[in-house]
Image 1 (cartoon, helix red, strand yellow):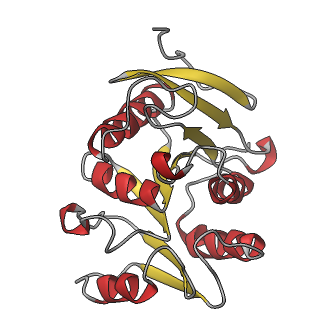
Image 2 (cartoon, rainbow, N blue to C red):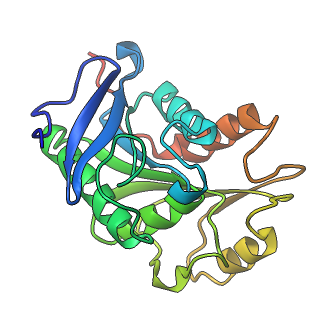
Length: 224
């Protein structure tokens, strides 16, 4: 299996990272140098057995949103998805995959703030991994509360944005709202009316919600 690259690419690039179950298919992108900031976001995709990949349109919009704010981005396919080796592992192995990707980011961008983001199943995996990482911002889009055991997911000790559609047809919106309400320290919750699970016709609204929700926690710029 190829070793992970020893530096973060300077341009948008597809690459292969070393994962615990074999090679992980990944892609990185970089912001406009004029607005670049000292931060990198790792973004997790929805459920592999339900067609989720790193090319999902919501994942793509998350990536675009944070890159426009000046952060480097990493998307990757969980084990058994796309060109990533291994087999689906019910969230456990996928969490290890994310930890491996985050470890690589920490090695090649040691001075960057690490952000984690995920959509649906990916938000569950990101929360499981967050307890093991120095996460500076969490972004959870349509977290599948009620479909997965979120009792094992500890709230990250950092700013946390949750975006949930009020007409979600996959995740029960009220379950998400009740889960948030029960937290001792409340994350920032954005409720989007007339919005289903995949944000059809609402992707630009999602972009705005993400950018507005995290703008106050952006890392410093790198521009001279």
